[in-house]
Amino acid sequence: MSRNVGIMKSILNALLLASTVVIISSASIGNSSRKAGVTIGKTGTGTGTLGEGMAGSGTGSTGSTGTGATGTGSTGTGSTGTGTGGGAPYQGLMRIERAEEWKSQTSYTTSGTLTNVHVARMILQVAGPPPNPPGQTTVYVNGQPVVVNWILDNYSYTVGGMPPAQMGAVISGSNLNPASGTFATPGGNVTGMKIALTAGGEIPLQISATGPFTPTSTQFLVTVDYVMNAHYIDPNTHQSVPEVQELRTYYTLNLLEMQQNGSAIDSRHAFGQPNLAGELPGDPNAPSRAVDFTHWIYQGGCFVGNNPVLYTTDESGLARMEFWGGGVGTGTCLAATATMLDMGARTTPTGAETVGVYIPDSSDYYPNDPGPGGLTWARLWTTINPTSQRGAPVDYANTPCSTLTLSATNTTDYLNWIIADTGGGGYVIPPAVFSHMCFALTNETTGPSWHYFGDASYQFVATTFPGTDCIPRIWWVGLNSSQTF
Image 1 (cartoon, rainbow, N blue to C red):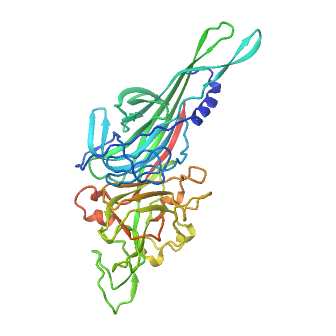
Image 2 (image 1 turned 180 degrees about the vertical axis):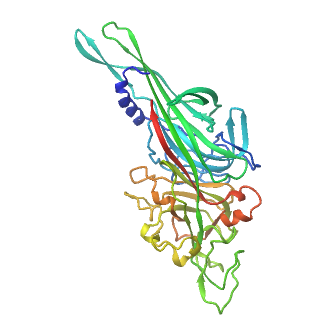
Image 3 (image 1 turned 135 degrees about the horizontal axis):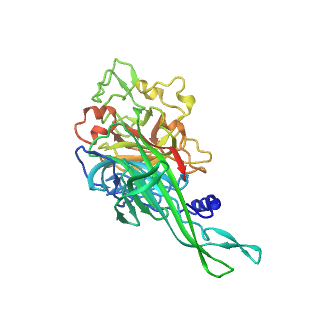
């Protein structure tokens, strides 16, 4: 397959160190009816409000306006932007830039395009250009070894995927449809989807449906080919000598939906027993009690914010959300994103707020974890002390895994908190985030502000999409195996 195979690893290492980032973004469409498929998304541009995310690009939801910290946002009107790079590690020839979920997108397939489809996807990014010079060889001149540099002519990446992975991409702003083709795997040649990428190019691998997802775990089988053409000038003959380097890695990737179980808590007290409609019947003869919102529907179930006591006649106080997960996915975690359905702000008072994902210390919930059934402010995770600051090492009970600034409007789309360490010296996804996580304002002394999200109770009574698929969840991208051949 290769000449000078022995130096390939050092060339590849230098190649990855020299890699660059190409930003890809995704177009937003409208609502839809159910139709299942596995596709890859079309893209567009937008700017917005995601404060911190993984390296290179950000995503967001229609209608949420603002300015991102850096980079380009995605999905239609008024979407989120990105923060500083998270340094997601390369796995040989590629890395997973992020995972994301959106209500309505356009997806390319070999048979055409699907519009208004619900998508969950991982964004695969190939490595950057080779170093200059890209390599060396030894030539003997008058019996003495002489090291000669190669001169780079061209290089290319090709990504191939077997069903169910169908692919589409946006490269330098131009749409490039996928093509059927044959590519090599360790088990022999197969027919699937192929697409060529420039250095740093990105390609979405996704599942899609025109309505709700069923809880899903989808395996993607992907091969990334790297070919470099170079030459050197033989000092003996002064003639050009071609060199070809080729590397191929086969990946088994898993995209897993991990639904979360939990609700909101706030610091108010009620007199009497609140019902599922969110009413608080006054009873001066009843003792004050912390309210349990676990089974409340929509505007009483899942919310975060701060309405300071005595600011108005509403004494809701401070609110957070606490969620329990169902374990971890398979394989090495390459990316994770928490998503919730945006149900908007309350009518008054209202305001934009920055919401972070925090991880309680294990001593806070073990062995006396109340679970969702006992979720009240009186039993909140006390190690959570939210700020927006980061240090090294990062303390996830005080500094967020991810932040997102929400507007006072309702996008009725999924909001994405990309879980990664964007500061503190490395790419880290805390294992505890998949079993316990808290959403809180990064500054809990400000207000008034209040924002609602879909939850399990609301999904139970909803009759139209996306309300019929609004349980909070984490999308896990796992690397199950890789093989270079």
